[in-house]
Length: 311
Image 1 (cartoon, helix red, strand yellow):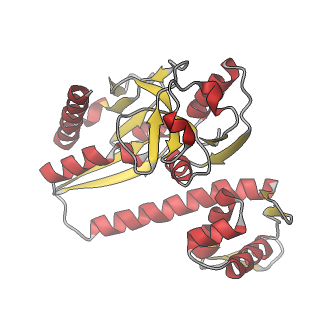
Image 2 (tube, one colour; image 1 turned 60 degrees about the horizontal axis):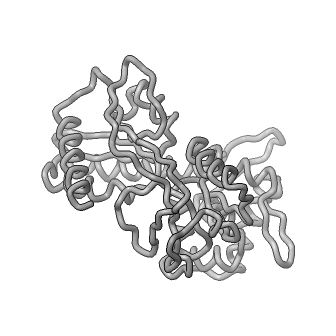
Image 3 (cartoon, helix red, strand yellow; image 1 turned 135 degrees about the horizontal axis):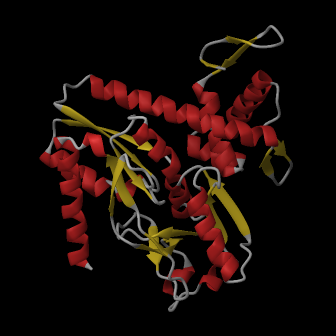
């Protein structure tokens, strides 16, 4: 498959898929509603429908089941969604690298993270204030992929949520984070005290897909299983960033480790009957403790100390 280009395929024709097809497809796959997807893309529904038909014709596969009241991904659509995410991630990373290469930097730091980038923004902002000549390259990856990327020397620093068992890597626990409910700002349950997990039983639950973060997904599902609750409706997204955007949009609620960082449009509430917590870690290669990496870790340590004093 080529983007705005062509490749030869088995039937002897040429397959041309453009980036707008990919973006339109992802919007519809996440919204599962033509009107909402069109609004998100700032277009009307007819051009969206046309682009999706063009994409299906090019691929030779039906990506969505459509009915009067429902839109669902086909099996082919689910497979293509994972590839679409990879393509968009690659394009975004290429753009970042290109922009960074246009400005001379004294050093660079490649950081991967799982979860939401909002959690890192305060630290990144402070680091940029103190070290403006360091180029920062950010990548969203699940914990397993981060560990592999560290070992392959593709990144310098990882923020992981699973145990690290490698003699080549150094780790540093960050802070135990208890799972809390993340609710849209005007959700009626915000005012309920105390709040229990069973109170979320009738809500639409939004999580990452199991393939995108098996540990986070299993943590969330295990909490409901232990409480004897079967979630009413589940919406899955590729990453926690998208999960939180969907919560902010009022499409449902989620369970997420509490970082203490406020997110606009979302209220985090402790659950009386949930004590599960995870302890994320920073990880880096033992042979790669550069001055720049140490500077970032020092900034992060100061940030954590400030959060602890505020509690």
